[in-house]
Image (tube, rainbow, N blue to C red; front, side, top):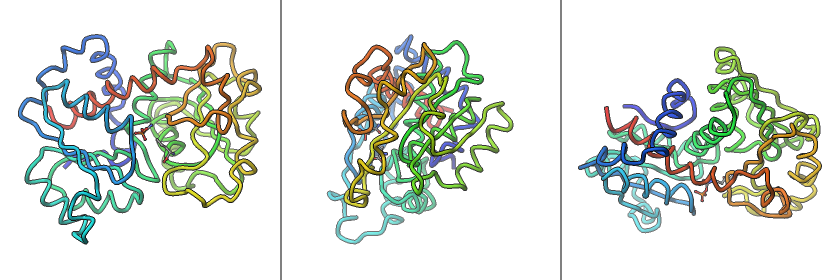
Length: 303
Ligand code: CP
Ligand code: NVA
């Protein structure tokens, strides 16, 4: 059973997925009908705007049917196990996308499921986002090889997925996080292994200026991820030096683009003049979520 739990699952076929996403963007009719007769459950235990709606829209555009579910409206809320939920949903639908907090919960769901499972975000990985991000970089830069992507901020799910998917794509991914908020060393090691065969590179440090220097892509994410609310007493003290402001744009390459997975908090992790400025590609980036989901669904369900 093929699942997409982390970027290691999409990495080996990343170039094909990028090509497919860009094909569907140019010619959406190529995707029409590909999911005819297929049902996909979208189970969200946390809020979502982009992931949920882009999946639902992709399934609709491909002629399939999406069953959108919130965790608290299932018997999960009354103590049914995640494994039993996976076994049962597998009898009704052809794939399940799950957004949940603990990555281990997603792994337990996938282990019990008998249909493909897509990670719609856990606290460790967000592979659907990273796929759309690499599609966006591919669209904007002539070649992915050696493109320097600088990520500033929390060493979170987005940092992990960018390191892994970036490594598979041949990017040079630089990450600068506050001390104590570094990415998981195990994920860094996995990304370095992927980079070794793609010609990419992974650099992890604490200096935001060095990270941004000469970069082709500047990327940041929220200070407070879902499930971490209230954990940092003063997020500004921890993350303030890593804000993506005009100084970091000045440090980067003259044609650098600015990316953010969204939702954004202007004045916190990103300055309003940067995210709303001429270098920002965040709306195209969010739009590309749709075509990335189409590529992923067609790889998983149309074989
Ligand atoms: N970027 C992203 O995954 O957004 P949502 O939380 O709105 O899905
Ligand atoms: N790191 C953020 C990403 C949201 C898309 C979170 O987990 O909340």
